[in-house]
Length: 197
Image 1 (tube, one colour):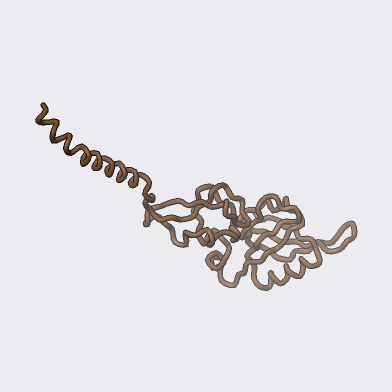
Image 2: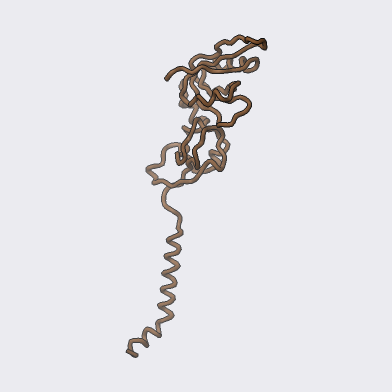
């Protein structure tokens, strides 16, 4: 028995060092960076409007699961405007944010035109893709006249909830409609009628 314990006693330090190194290696493996490609997703349900740093989180996906136009840096999305509501966990891509990538999907001859509705609550009835007519109410008398300024234009984005001084919409319009809307905004209050889908 003593003959067996002597070699173990001699190598006790060597065995202890080996076990300590094994423990360190296991600890390093447990804290290593998770695998996959880092991309940005919505940290919570977003109703639209401008993206803040708190609105986004990093998720990791296999390379083959990363869609075209995905973002991997917060600076690329913070301050940009969403094209519509986004669910928690949904990936943020160039198709979900206003900009060159999104505007290219509007169609030939169309531009993104911001218009402010007089009634902010009316904007809560709208969703991206809705088709509306824009009306302008002119005059200060008790019964102002309303005229249609733009017909059958598509809602691109609506504002986030909580707007107090009217609601800023973005519409896909022709250049001529954009000019008419700009003229009407300077001298009237705007509202919309919604076409059935």
